[in-house]
Amino acid sequence: MKHFFYLAALLFSPLVKGETDSAVLAIDTLQAYFIPTSDYEYIPGNADYDLVADRLSCIEGEIPLNFNTRVFAFINYFAVKDREYTKMILDRKNVYFPIFEKYLKKYGLPDELKYLSIIESGLNPKAISRAGAVGLWQFMYYTGRQYGLHKDWYMDERMDPEQSTEAACKFLKQLYNTFGDWELAIAAYNTGPGNVRKAIRRSGYKRKFWEIYPNLYRETRSYLPQFVAMIYVLKYAEEHNFHEEQVQHPMETDTVIVNSYLHFETLANHLELCVEDIEQLNPALKRKAVPGTASGYVLKLPKTAKKLLSANREAILDTASKVGKKELEHLARNSVGNTYGKNKIVYRVKSGDVLGKIAQRYRVRVSDIKKWNNLRGNTIRIGQRLNIWQRPGYQPRTYAQKSTPKVIQMPNGSKTYVVQPGDTLWDISRKFDGLSIEKLKKMNRLQGNKIKPGQQLIIGG
Image (cartoon, rainbow, N blue to C red; front, side, top):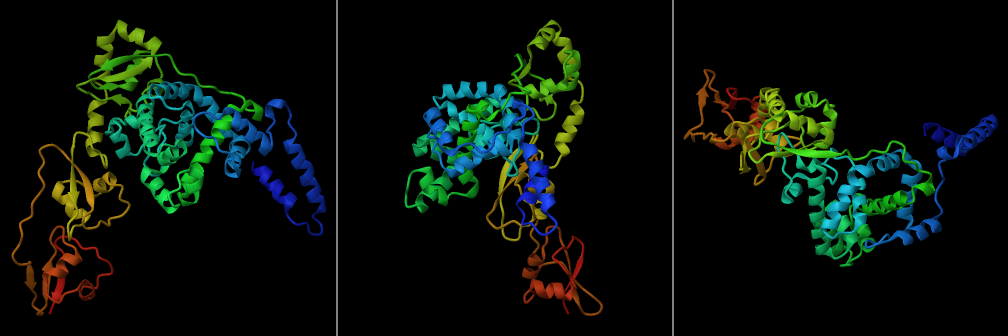
């Protein structure tokens, strides 16, 4: 494609003296670029607008497939400009579409909704967005938890194709019941029902997607058109000269209930498998191991391996339960932001709080608090709720209130204050009458706000 853009730029740029030969060469080269060496390699140009409109009307089902220039632009994007992405989807769809179809049927939802996961994740069960949405259906943590998807250090059920698809069906059904319109429900899946309601209000209480379109966020304005465009391109893939080249097929599997810790690599070696096969079948397990659970974990294995496991189950599982467990548990306890084996509390920020002070109180690290609460900097505000994860049995530290601040009288007549753990310049300025942060910084020649326990600060003469 780089060659194409170079040639196109050369072809359509204004000609100056001496460039005529280059332009002619560019035309010849550009024509050669688009001459197919075989039908298989042929890339069709932009589809005919009226033809696409007619084709869409033929495949429209329960969900409206409204057609306009915005949808048409995305059709040309998927069919012409980014054919590699569409080929990837064609190769993956046979693995995941049967799962989607099963749960859509179970919940009485339109079959077309299976295409929504393509726009969400590109049919990648381990996809993670910049905002922290995860899996085939891109659930945020709280939404996933609302629909029964568990997450801890060892696993994230948002990555499980079966469980996340069922959760997505429940969520979509609720959204449709809320809005009574599939286009609005799909928009709400992307941006949240609150933002759709806001767009409805701003539009004068209009109730159709294309009527509230200008009042939606930019990403959501593109979301539904991409969904319609992908339905069209996959339905008419052959007409746009797409061929299934490296088609993936679902592996024949069986399940085994595991109650104790299990190391993937050891298990794979005993079952004559590639460890990647076990990972692919169990994408929700993030550490290449099954955590020990009292209720048992349903582990998927290739059907052929299940037979070998059944023949020598006790010995194989016993061996696989002894490798790497201590190392993983150590990593779980010490990795930044881990929640493994901890209980969550919610702390409301008070006046004078800083992250360091809160971290000391709850015996955690500042980096942990930032990770748990998706904080990019150290700024927190009064009243803000912070998630804190503590080990069972730990009690918050309490700091005794001092009746008078610790002040030292210096020989030269000046007074200094010894900084205490958790102190900030703002805290110190409040301890002494007539002392402001600016005055404190000026007397001590401080360039910033950073201070440390034990430091002596001049507070007056």
